[in-house]
Length: 294
Image (cartoon, rainbow, N blue to C red; front, top):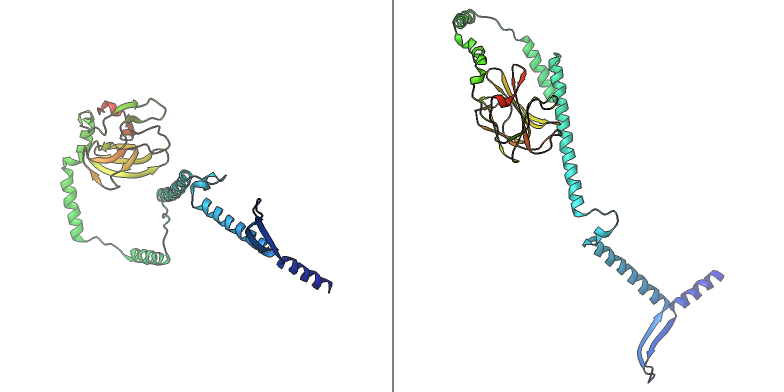
């Protein structure tokens, strides 16, 4: 009973009406009159507080005021975060590709089968093709034997087999197209393990092939960035490193003076836009400045 009486008295206090009047000080005339209760006052104050919180939240969320909140990133920082995430993802994919390439090369050099990411259907096809390949037996026919003897007799007196060795002797007389026009800032052998020359040029400048040849490597490495490697006649190999963009792929043939890449600043071992060019002959590095004018 006491609790009911307390509740009823509390409700009466909250619902009891009060009169708020505003009088004119000189004439004592009522200007404004408000009839209120405690419950109405609490309701209006609570509603006003909720509306004020909502307005402040919307103001901070949809205006630039949110940048003044401690720990909230600026638009430039958010853009940098997104770009770093994209670069990290691309770098992880490239590292995974390079790792698989190295693993496959090691497997091939050791005589093992390289690993391949295949599905179940591909594995079944591989097993079926390997079985059929083992079942195939090649037999030499009489026509094939006669054709081989004819070719061997013709090759005995073919001087084209000796032409590469003759060209090696006249290497100094071979014409090399300049890969790029610029200033040599690091010559051959200036630093330890420096087997080429560093030529400074404008970013995006054209890089040309020094001779006719075939692209044997076109890819990206951590230290030297985008690299292009071309096999030329007379056991000559040319390297083009730190490029911004590669224009040729592995297996494509190039002509002397043809555009193959663009100058860049890729890789860890670089301090600015330049081309690191190397020229190798029979596995020995040559000084490019002795044969090419940059």
